[in-house]
Length: 311
Image (cartoon, rainbow, N blue to C red; front, side, top):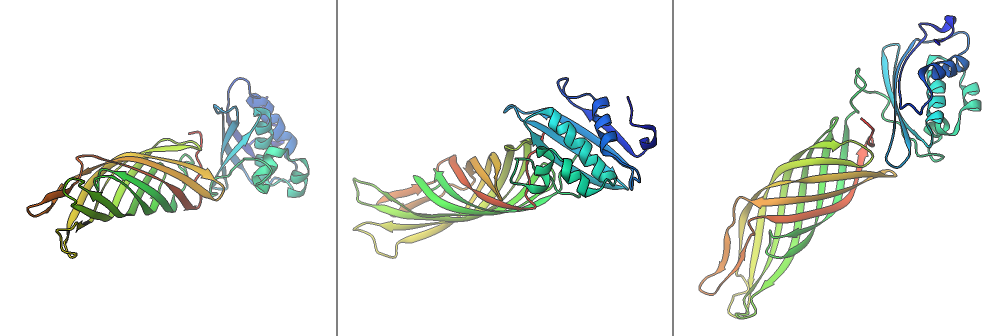
């Protein structure tokens, strides 16, 4: 059953949903109920409903109104609520009185405008014309780091990053500080204090674009390693520094938590230069491992904030 004859051409809906959801004819009837006389706009809409592994239903609604594209992503405990939300949203797009819409809006649709009452989220209003790509964002992040291998032992540190996120891609520049790590040879009494400062760039591609986003990443970094010799036979000024160049590969996991995005990064670091730091005639105090393991955990702020969808 289509929309009432006086509404034909005003709202065109493509409804894709699992069999347990209301059929398109039922959703169109809901739209016909929501619409009233004096429609202000023609609306073309594509609605796709999926069920997540957590038992939450997700709606991705892409609309075209007078040549302008808009994308919404809503979540609800049942598919029926998302069908009602679709009808009311399209009614509002077509020009239904907002006062009447607020009086009859079910909890899932109200959550889109009121925020705290339900976990629904809306993507940025302006999207590319085809409606299938999220808009780009800029991210600023801070993280704690743990590196095993670059400086000879487990080295805690800190990292900061700036990212550009167009669609499923991420381009990022970052800085890493590994402060002083102490190494010592118990038989000779000779040791060293090592530290590293490096900057890098990497690219990532999202392979799981959901609320928990998983991306594969690769990049490179360059910096300096400072080694200060320590021991009874050494002068206090015994120190040296060398360039640090390495390639990196790993994963990036992100998850939105309020206004922040939690990010975790396990990665492998392969140094291209493995200089030995030697106290002449006494001992070798440091050589970087062939492959180092690095893990980072921190928070990111995105403008505007990105959330995963069910593409």
